[in-house]
Amino acid sequence: MPELSDGESAEVRGSSGSVYRLKNVGGVYSCSCPSWRNQSLSIDLRSCKHIRQYRGEQAEQERLGMNAQSAPTSAEPRRSPPALLLAQSWDNEQDLSGWWWSEKMDGVRAYWDGKQFLSRQGNCFYAPEWFTAGFPHQPLDGELWIGRGQFQQTVSVVRRKHGGEAWQPVRYVIFDAPTVSGGFEARQAFAKQLQTQSPSPYVRVLEQSLCRGNDHLREELSRVEALGGEGLMLRQPESQYESGRSETLLKIKTFHDAEARVLSHLPGTGRHKGRLGALLVSLPDGTQFSVGSGFSDRQRESPPPIGSFITFRYQELTTNGVPRFPTFVRVRSDQS
Image 1 (tube, rainbow, N blue to C red):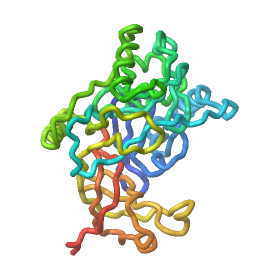
Image 2: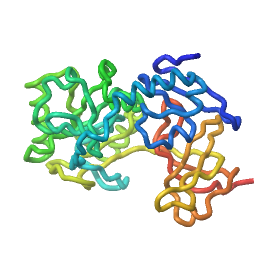
Image 3: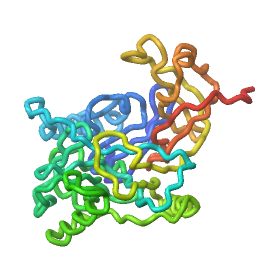
Image 4: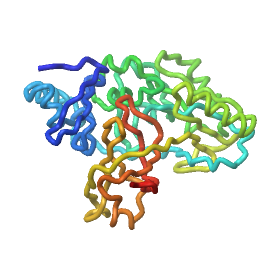
């Protein structure tokens, strides 16, 4: 049976005639079909009929069996989610002169509790011992990051229990030192001192620069996005580290609008049971994905008809050409 090398992709035609894209990223196979995307399993344990069709049933069973053996078990203790500082969105008007700006990293948020990495939900990222050798016992807030545009690759590495050498390109980029007293500048100085005292090739402190005004901010946003960055983060000077969303941390990103054709209505679950959960849509190039946010209750009761075109907003395209974080905006008004 055919096999995909790391980073390669292929197309498979489904039984309905739709074409789906398969990809291998670090040994994790993904498919653009709704069946693969809507599974609640971790990405390394997901499969679908299109992957099995391409790789063969035996090869896929062996892959899933190996990943299941290395996956965390339900017997592992539950951990409380870390009390992380979360950002608000900039209103495009507030004067941010004198604030600290940095690039918004396209990685996986990770809290170092002094012994291990934890996700926002309190799940453990199983970094190899050689990766964390020399890490401080001091809690740190940061992001596991490979590079601009490498979000999927990063996720495929850090969500596996035994990533091994796959962690080599990962870096831990430090944002803050939550338990250190003092304002933001004092905590940044502490983080830089830690890096100097215990240097590691896998750790760096995120660079911060002073904002000279909103025009300067928009120039930097354009420059970073032109380089493939996700956006900017702005931090109020002398601000404290606090749990939850705060006006002292702002995120700035440019979102894109596009249009897609409605293929089907996907049923909702939970509070949306019995009405629309998401729209399965298609771009002009045939790329299919679901749009599940941005709808009012009335729109979920009476969704855009199949065959109609909608306008949606998204952050960026994945390496497979699928819009990230698509949000419904409106039904296109010039429908024929």
